Amino acid sequence: MTAILSTHDLALTFSTKRGPVEAVRGIDLAVEQGEILGFLGPNGAGKSTTLRMLTTLLAPTRGTATVAGHDLATQPRAVRRKIGYVAQSGGLDPQERVRSELVLQGRFYRLSRAEAEARAEELAVDLDLTELLDRTCAELSGGQRRRLDIAMALTHRPALLFLDEPTTGLDPGSRADLWELVRRIRDEGTTIFLTTHYLDEADALADRLVIVDHGEVVAEGTPAALKERYGGSPEATLQDTFIAITGHGPRREEPAPLTV
Amino acid sequence: MPTVLADSLLVFERYARQTLRSRITLIFGLMQPMLFLGFFGPLLQDVPLGREGDSWQILVPGLLVQLALFSSSFAGFGILIEKQHGIVERMRVTPVSRTALLLGRTLRDVALLLVQSVILVLAGVAFGLRAPLLGVLIGFVLVAVLAASLASLSYAFAMRVNTPQEFAPVINSINLPAMLLSGILLPMALAPTWLDVISHLIPFRYLVDGVRAAFVGDYGDSALAVGALAALLLSAASLTLGTRLFRRAGA
Image 1 (cartoon, rainbow over the protein chains, first blue to last red):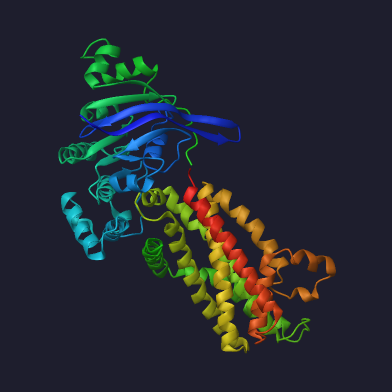
Image 2 (cartoon, rainbow over the protein chains, first blue to last red):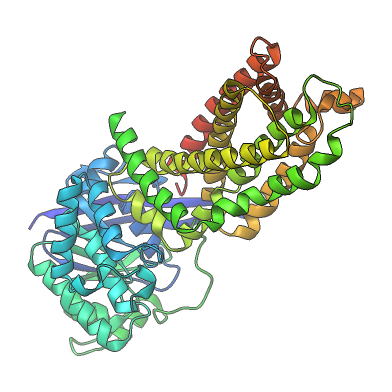
């Protein structure tokens, strides 16, 4: 197996009025080509911050990373051409129509107008959005909006797709549909880097887990291996395993570090 | 460089369409200068204003600068809302030029300002403004440059704050003094020396004087040259700073 993403000592320290805050303290991890990597951690563990560094949105204060064959620090543009990213909040303008969002995204990926329009139709068919193309994003349901977010991120057939808590706020039916979709995207050849704090989601989707807490990797391995090692047996729940590793549940309620 | 331009046009197109859909934006920015034109302008008609030109040739250039000052400095407001929807980040993860994300928006603001300026000048003509066409066009160029400068700074600033509550007070506390000190409503020629001295520190003052010189057809007047120079320096500084902050923001 070859790694499509690897980091070495990746760290980010925010400077705030109350002094420096170490959001991410030096992460080493690798994502293998073709896998679904579940990136787990309690709220405030540094999941989103790590993701935002790997997607060129935040500059690391230390460390290096290679993403989809390119150096994160020196070739951010090449990285952007190879990755797709769906943020927790999505990225749709409520007043824009579904079609115009898809077409503009295609144009941003350097497609001609005609190509971008054709690609929009194709993605709509693929992600079951055809009926919605002429609606505004405000008129979509939560599940439909998520599908559109993912369609936008797939515009350029990225090698690596980052999904930041993709099912947060979705109803159970839409969640199940989205899991199905994520598996399908992986089966079609896209590697997936997924953060979540739903343990059933990680258990159901991920081939391998990396668990972070306080900005550091605290455990990694397949769900079965982690359960056996930390939960006591392969039949242990991921919940118990997680608590054994981090000392608390995944939804620790404390203020997340400032994300700008 | 051509990529930046092509990308800027893409971005411009999107935001221009959004602006055309909500005509309220057009009218909203025009409200204040229109009120000054209608309810304040007539008061100046027989007042000696200490400089060449009739009262409309002095007031309307001031109102044009005021329009640019207020509408452009609040341009960043839109991006605050987009940030909450994740739109800015979504775009920044694509290969689109980050400079173009700023320039395209700024271009929309300049276009909007020019439409508003035409309406304002036409309304001025209805009230009694008479000015040479060339002078008016020069005036438009100067306020367009001013608008581009302020809008890009406003966007860059908006990228660094998280809520409208942090954004609006800062802009307001800069705008009002800047407006009063640049002699937008009445020429600074009327000011006592100390006030005149302070007002020379405000770059917008030179623009107001420049546009006024253009409106009376004094193309050789040093005020026009100084105004153009001020606009040029301001835009060079603001666009450099604006694009740098905007590209880096979040980092």
